[in-house]
Length: 487
Image (cartoon, rainbow, N blue to C red; front, top):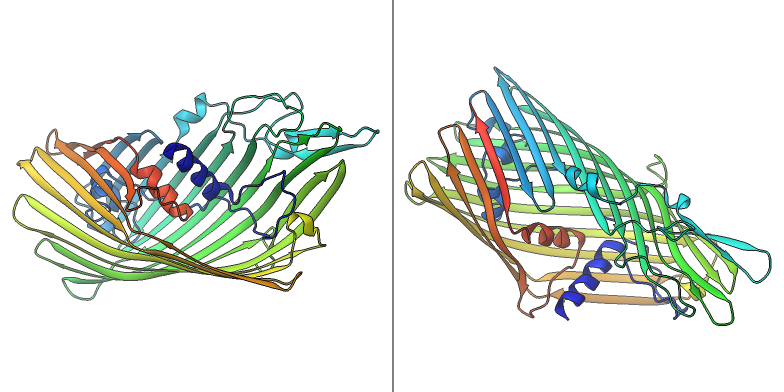
């Protein structure tokens, strides 16, 4: 029962609100929520096991503000594997020049999956009315009823150039999500077989950063980044065919871009094996149609009710601000032990206007103005202990997701109604264990052995946002294996 609830909540987070096609009176007009891609950074088993409090060369060599802190002399090469895919990376130092490249994703899984990246309009179905009219509705299936597998694929490529203390990184990622929770199933009169969601997002990105010394132990680390997510998103349910041969279908289709720019400023103090880093990031995010930054995104709501085809095109005009303050300290206890502690917060302010080209109030197409505030603080602890000098180290970490607050105020301008909500999520915990084996001075195996996932104090999973879901999926890796060689 708990697993069923977990899957249901995860589906809600990834694909927006669920649609009950039997109840045709929707009072809240909320657009679907596609996946939120982030800039890709390689993460070692040590980093994951210590809850992000202790970093290795893998975690630094593609970081625009920390690539100078790597310990290898000329070259670093690594490969990693976990249940979600593989990572491959290499870095090279040539005097004051630094080159890096990395891949992370599910390329191997893609070769054996039945997922399709076809445009959903090519995978549609026609509903034939008792007369001669036909209505085509989008869906992740073709006219013959063939369905791709339930799959989520992610592939990211990054190139890195460092000159003196300045790092430049360009990247490209693709996320393909096909959500078909059941196998092929014939349509039954009076029933909907299953819901579906399709998303294909292409994301070019750019990051620029540096590490400037103020003194021998104090550094200023500025970073700027930009990212454009090009989305194709479709969500809906199979049509319902009633006993009197009438039909009903409801679904959403979006093709839009999402622009994201940000800046991060940090201060780092280093002394005798310890490191104190504090700073904050500020990001702006907006959905747009095409490449017009002043526009809003378009959302098409397709409704087929009793063979009547209705389409409402709404403009989703938003601006989301995100602030991420953080403070991290790592230091040595003795020659064998090192520990780290990190406190951070994810604070978001989002305001959007949803304006339909016409009202279809029975199905929730209202003119809406909404303000949202989201606050999620997190406290992490990690440590590593060398059991066999120069050979074997054990890592462990503990994370505490503190109280999360989500405040929303919405005004339905079509009906004059207002609505406000306050959601509070109790703290939840995460645990991780890993180890490192040094085969020789230049070759090491770094493994995240096991994590316990997330447990909150109500014994129910906490999936309050996309980022939480992504972290949970990562934390539930039973192992991550890295092989690193350096010279």
